[in-house]
Length: 495
Image (cartoon, rainbow, N blue to C red; front, side):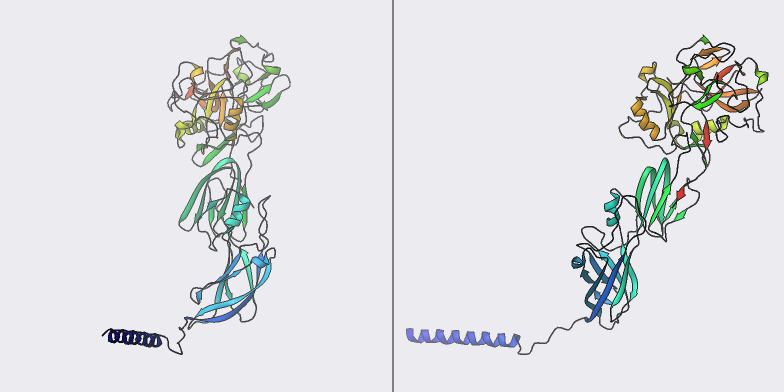
């Protein structure tokens, strides 16, 4: 019985093995059929050249040749089954190289228009154009990062094809000594930025740069590098201030001053410079014995900044002043310091102090290097780094409690950002210097032929209102400080 059982088991095993072998033979035919491909392999060879960028930013090394990691990708999704990628590693350091490979052309399609782009995962973008604006942090590296090298819609040729890769991202550099608001538009997309000083951007080809501070809009095309630059007029501070709709001005770098004995005009050497530290003393009738430093004065009778006006009187002899007044009630004469200068009218002061956007937040009392005065911030104000935020509104009893206090070094940062400081210099009443008023002259008459001044209250920074901000002067018997201005004409240079 045991012998029979062993024999049966052996026969069963042989049967199972035979069956298994037959199944394997069925799944592995002697002549397997090759899987059909969806494309045809077509030879491709090309001489590819990089066209180096012309011009550029100072100190920036521009791409001139292939580097390790560069890949040239040949694409056309309507024709090619997949892009052809050709490594440029062996051609590092060259601007021209010969490449070859096989195009996988879709079944039923013919090689036609192709596009070549340059990619580099380490240094450059992914071979795609940028449709938005990128601010450059490190100009040299970011020019590589945001570059887009391409040759679009070139003709396929069975023999060697010539492909010229051109960099097409536009790079824009702004150099603005004053703060400007800029829009960069690309189609429906708008990039808005406030620029003060230098700023560089990668911009889509064909985008438009717009700004109310520029004479016209600029379409960025036909070249790779654009430079927008402007200059602050000589002896002006780098801040723009609106004094009417679509009308801006620069302030002079300091108050107007005059040297009696020589008949010489100048601007104060710094904004918080004043000529008189004492008060209530007699200056004498000859107007020539001022006890200010080197006999300079920064206090003038109304209209004394006009060329041709006598500067030898103390203010008691108003009939000696022949001041030209226009139909609008404002002084129309030329400034003795220079024809390009003038003084703000009452309407212009009112717009600056009360009407321009956020006017109430852009002015207030301050102490600069211990000197009392009034700060006015430009339209597009950017707080300097390392400076406490400016406080526009406060009410204190003593000047030591004023929140806006600046050392000389701190004020240099404020001034560089465009801030204006009007120091309280005092005034002349008849023949006496007094520190009891904080007024600045306008160039406007009031009713009754009385000149008008603007009055500031340093301890109560909310005291100036549109109703009482402009004070009445008292005839010609008061002398006040003068801050000159120049009207701004958009003069941005585009290269």
